[in-house]
Image 1 (tube, rainbow, N blue to C red):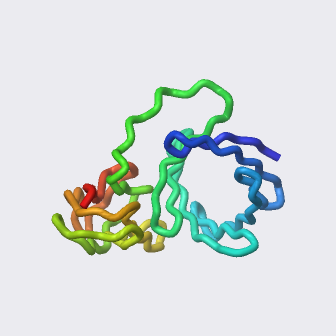
Image 2 (cartoon, rainbow, N blue to C red):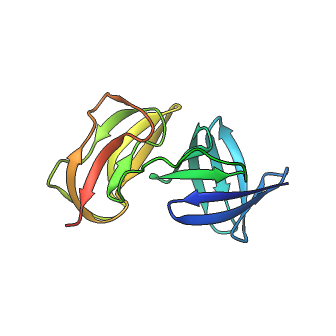
Length: 159
């Protein structure tokens, strides 16, 4: 069994894992099944999520149903200074990937959860969804481009 503290922005989350593929996050249990390297099926008693993870030291880029988050792992040992992150309206690449489709343009209004572009990584498509409603401020990539983790793909401003 392992105990970790994950940081998702300013939020800290207590995580416990066991050898049987069971993970407990903030006292809620999940079953994790590996689909392929870096791709998992996570489920509880009611829902299932396809999760893609890319490592970068003590940091993980996690994509869940098209929502991307930077997760830091606190192992209790000293860490390097935290990286500066993009603002809340920026959608970033979760892992090295190729931009397959761009579905928005600057000035376009989008609703929360709308797919704004599609990436391809590890032989699977990753829809990148708007984290909130807003207006597309800029697009920082082009179709066919190989993007690296953390690269700002699309920026939103409040609409």
